[in-house]
Length: 340
Ligand code: HEM
Ligand code: HEM
Image (cartoon, rainbow, N blue to C red; front, side):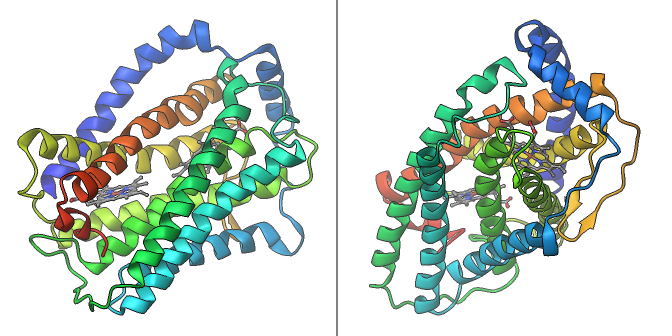
C-alpha cells in the first residue's frame, strides 16, 4: 500500500509537471474556438446564476437511483449465492445495454446533431464518438447478457471475507471496484453528452447535477478505497503473469488511480473557475474562489481532453489484460481475484 500511495503521489506530480509544458505547446492547436471564448465570457457574466435544480430535485433523485443500482450490481456480482450473482451480472448487463440503447435513441431523435457550438476544435468529433460508444455499450451489454446465461449454469457458493487475502481481493475492495467501474464508465458518455447539449435545452442543468454528483461519489469511493487498502493490504500481483505483464498491470492500476482522483478534481476546479456550483446529490458545494475566464481553459483541457484520452488508452489495456488472462491464457483464477 505504501508503494502504491508513493506511486500515486509521484504520478500526480509527474502529470502536473509534464502536462504544463504540453498544454502550453498545445495551446496554439487546441485553443478554444471563437464560440468557445464567447461561451466562457457568458459563463463568467452569469456566474451568479446558479438557479439549477429540477422540480422536486428530480435530477438528484435520478443520481441516487443510478448510484443504488451500481451498488446493488457490485454487491450482487460478488454475492455468496450463485443465483444472486446471476442477478448482479444481469443488472450490469441491463445498465450497459441501457446506455447503448439510450445513445441510439438520442441518435434517432437527432439530439447528437443538434449540439451547442464547439468549445475546443476537437469537439467536432463528439457526435461520432458518441455513436461509436453507443455501438460499444450495446455490444458490451449483449456480451454481459451471454455471461449472465453462462452464470445460470454455475452452482458454486462463494466464500469470501471482507478483507483482502494474499491471492485475491476481499468483498470490500470488490464492491468498491465494481461500483466505481460502473459509475466511471457511465460518466464518460454522460459527460460528453452534457457538454454537447445546447444552452437552452431544459434538461441540460439536470444532466450536470447527475454528472457532478456521481463524479464526486467516485472521489469519495477512491478515498475510502485508499484508506481500506492501507488497513487491508492488496493481494500480491498474480504469480501466473510474466514479469512484463505484472509491470504493465501495476502501471495500469496506478494510472487508473490517477484518473479516479484527477477527473473529479479537475471537473470541480473547472466548474468553480466558471462560477458554477458543484453538486453532491441534494447539496451544492460552496464556491471556494472567484470565477476566472483565463483559468477555465487549462482545467477544461485536462478534464475534457487529456484525461479522457488517457482513460481510453489505460482502460482498453486494463480490460484487454483481464480478458486475455481469462480467454487466451485460460487462466481462470486471474479474473476470479476481482469477480466470480
Ligand atoms: C468494466 C471493466 C473492468 C474490468 C473487466 C476490470 C477487471 C479487473 C480485474 C480482473 C482486476 C484484478 C486484477 C488483478 O490484480 O489480478 C482489476 C483491478 C483493478 N481495477 Fe478494474 N476492471 C474494470 C474497470 C475498471 C475501472 C473503470 C477502473 C477505474 C477507473 C478500474 C480500476 C482498477 C484498479 C485500480 C485495480 C487494482 C486493484 C485496486 O487497487 O483496487 N477497473 N480490475
Ligand atoms: C470520475 C469522475 C468524472 C468523469 C469520468 C468525468 C468525465 C467527463 C467527461 C468525459 C466529460 C466530457 C468532456 C468533453 O468531451 O467536453 C465531462 C464533462 C464535464 N464534467 Fe466531468 N467527469 C467526472 C467528474 C466530474 C465532476 C466531479 C465535476 C464537477 C464537480 C465534473 C464537471 C464536468 C463538467 C462541468 C463538464 C462539462 C463541460 C462542458 O460543458 O463542456 N465532472 N466529464
